[in-house]
View 1: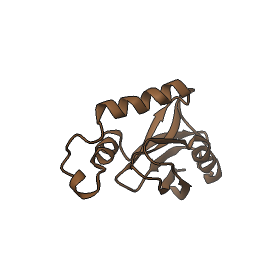
View 2: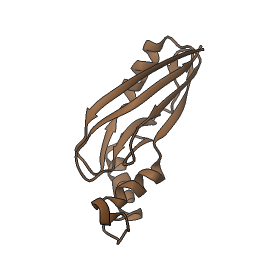
View 3: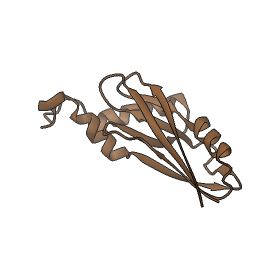
View 4: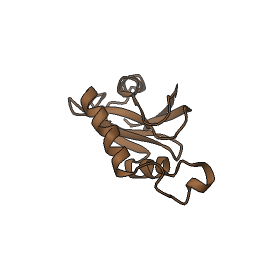
Length: 137
């Protein structure tokens, strides 16, 4: 079995910034030479997330609004006593830090309208990294 690990690095704009990383992940899969296996996309950090969603402007705005409505800012969360970003941590916990995709015949398997996004949930712009690990034969 072969394992290839790469990192994507980028700057975010802060709460709630959506960054499409689909092409970069596909490029890493292609460069890996792995024909069949899987790819893990993971963000180290407690206020970032990896999701799949269609890259359509209306849907992306709907997604942002849904996050704000589900876990609103400033609702008296206990963690806000520390750094006023409890809602960021809670949103990240619901969304998750990783996604795993199959690799078949050397290509990332995903739906036609299924793109891979990094979601910045922290209240400030940040320098982020995403770990992409391709495993297989």
